[in-house]
Amino acid sequence: MVLSKKVARFNRVATNRVLGPLTKGLPGFGTIVHRGRKSGKTYRTPVNVFRAGDGFVVALTYGPQADWVRNVLAAGGCGIEMRGRVVETTRPRLVHDEKRTSMPAGVRQVLSVIGVTDFLFLDRVS
Image (cartoon, rainbow, N blue to C red; front, side, top):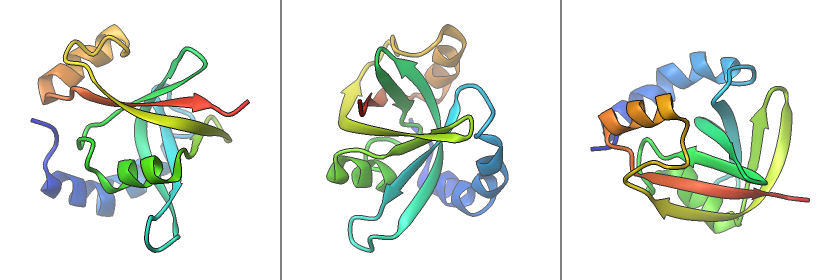
């Protein structure tokens, strides 16, 4: 049970506008900077993101079919804005992990409650 489309719409209209500016400094949050597959328009999507080796892992709280995920997969990467700077990424890969092993312990518990089992891994561009 990932978050519903109704929750996603509400977050896009209300929550993301409030949370968006805060993600630049909060640990565990960042903003995915990506382009629309059809429109070519630049979008900014607040996400839960954590370092994973030389790259990053993003919890897919709306599932792997979210538009931003499909945009990143189609483009072969995206920018991740964290702490005031944008890091370019490449090689996006979807990983299904019911144990949520790539997440910190506290986050793992929260994601378990809402049923998140899909993650997007991205490599940092050298």
